[in-house]
Amino acid sequence: MSNTPPAFVGDHDIDQTTLDIIESTLSNTRYEMDRVVETTAISPVIREQSDQFPLIADAAGRMVMGQFGSAIDTILENSPFEREDLEDGDVIATNDPYMCAGAVSHTPDMLLLRPIFYEGDLVGFSSQWGNLMDVGGKTPGSMPVQARTIFEEGMRLPPVKLYKRGEIDSELLETFAHNTRLPDHAEADIKALAAGTKAAETRVHELCDRFGKETYVEACDAILDRTRDGMIDLINEFIPEGERYTFEDYVDDDGMGNGPIKLHLEIYREGDTVYLDWTGTDEQVPGTVNFLLNEKMFKMFTGVFLIMAFDPLLSFNDGYYDLFEVTLPKGSVVQPEFPAPLGNRLPMMARQFDVLQATFSKLIDGFSVAGSYGTSPNLVYAGTDSEGNDFQMLEILYGGIPARPGGDGLDGHSWWPLFRTVPAEYQEAYYPLSIDEYSTRTDTGGAGEFRGGHGITKVYTFEEDGAITFQDDRAHTYPWGVDGGSHAQTSEKLLLRTDGTEEELPSKVENVAVQAGDKLVFSTAGGGGLGDPLEREPAVVAAEIERGLISESAAHEEYGVVLGDDGTVDDAATSERREELRSTRDEPAAFDYGPLPDDETLAAHIADERRAFNDRHN
Image (cartoon, rainbow, N blue to C red):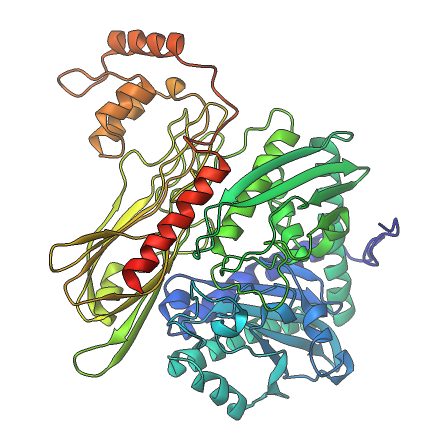
């Protein structure tokens, strides 16, 4: 790599107070952008669940504030115009992952990019993308399981100007929305995303009015430089030189009988540079779990891990990107080649987080990382009701968050911290279904000194005939525990028919017919535990038994906690039981992967499960 530092590195002619004001304003603006979108969009996946991501960049396209990393240069390269063709009021739109290097990772994600001008000069960009309810394709929700190419995953819009000098291209928007199953939702949500980018433009203009254009531009450079300096300190303090560290984990399958699917990461440091190499990861698969991992996005993920673990006051942005070198093997599941399908990339995305943090746990001396995450599946229920009205529900569900140093994992929570669940009342009011149960799954979080978060069980009764499509994972592999913590339990799906028959469903299915009165019991996986369960405070275990989070049998077998007849801890019996467990068990492992068979046996089981499912439904 080049030893030449980025252009923003150097002395900056700006006082610290002004810099702090500008940085804080931009930080607040990214949340304002989200709020504008949430209160303007009409689809529950954005309005209720907050599946949208903001970004504010400088004139060079470098992210100064945001969440997912910038691919502005790639978007412009794949557009029919040059930077010189951009004008005040333009907004570029695209939902094609391959034309933005994976800045959005499947076709339902629509990205809008607004150049920001001040006094005729380009001073930056604002961007917002969000998950639309539908963009066409072979299944409602545009996330088919059985697709073999991206052409089956809906309408793909290359980078084009949706707004030109402030005027919307209504024919373009109408054409795109016409190719979706929910055109009113698509139009409203896309306009909401545009409003989010406009909010950022307004705040940038106010900063330029207050401090001057030159000061604002200088501040963007200084913010990037400040983050880069902080990251160099973190790298040198926590990441040793001279050693290479690796970790492997698996996505269960691709929904077409292929699996398990390996992710392999190696991390090492040379000087101020950290190298992250995915060589050894499995080749892309026929099914839709391929994840087009944007290089800048992965650098952002890596930096966020270090920042949140060791210096949470540091802003994460493009400032530190030159300090990380990433190898993404072409044709692998983290860098699939066009036209590989991408619709159900969430299992792969979640697993790359697991692999990244586990590799760092080996790398950073004395640092106990969190265990493995459960799952974050999608569920779509669609059909035509008895009055002839079409309906389509899309929901993101959550598994257990792994235990973390010093605290338990959260039950049934998204690994995106700002995501929310859809209220049952909302679903019952707008869709033909009822929610009979929404509860934590007892004993599904991995045992540990700090317990992994439990998965959830959600029970739906469908009130109209229709079809369901969902993708999940961790049905065959287990969310692992760390440093003596136990693995969590797997996900499960059970369809209860009105005729009394029951069917266990795989974790990924497409267009399974359901009738009015059928029930779906949707259970997600837990998160891995951290630390020796025999070190967990017995009174906490007793309290969780009372709350139904831990069973008495698990308390006895895993935590060594014995209760008296009154439900309180029997201290003497507990001490005796824990001593018995310590004397008979093996030395706790650094990672507990659960009772996994060998890869060949697991692959055969996954193939047999898919074959049996296809035989029942084809």
